[in-house]
Image (tube, rainbow, N blue to C red; front, side, top):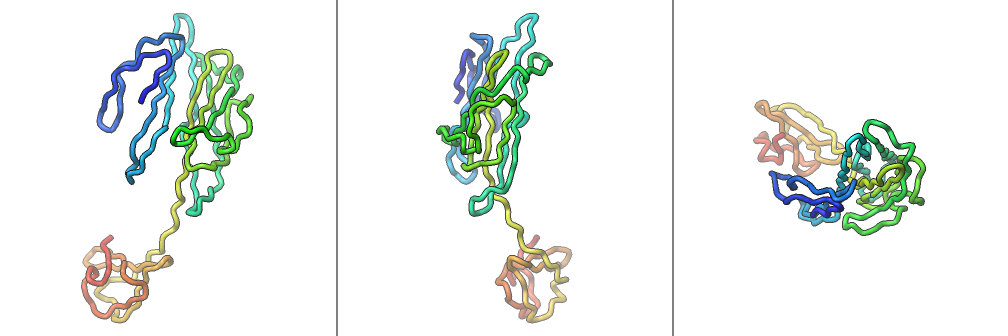
Length: 237
């Protein structure tokens, strides 16, 4: 969904995996914007909505340089343990305002910070560890994330037009280290009654005719006969 402010949005369409819009025209003011909201389903079937990206447009007047505002990045993933505890992190979001090629940060401040959930519901600033809505610096330092997802809308104002930019925080579960792989030789040379490992510490691997096989059978079982790996609970690599 596209929500325009002071601009006319073109016709929506599809191009492969991308949602497209034809030319955006008729800017009714010196600045305008389009808020694009995305909804759909993840690969696992879970529905999501409220993911918003704001695109700003400005008229470039004869003899005047255009204003622009950008963040140095647009998203950050925070690693968490299986129990939900965040791994330590620190993320600085830098904001740049330019008029033409001239840096105008010294003439701007952050005038508002708003935090939203994935469903576009307002969240407290404490969700990202902030207790103030204003800052004389043109950056935010974030080292706390109390939700699995947070969209931070940062508004700046100053000598020129105001701008609002969005930054996305999300959590991702840190992967655990798998078992160590232990190569125990050619399968045809294995001795009868050898105990095989398949546990969190070690998993046995053998080779046969140039292919490698990882043991996926019961940990602690033993070889009772020289047979093909597939018949004993082995999986080709």
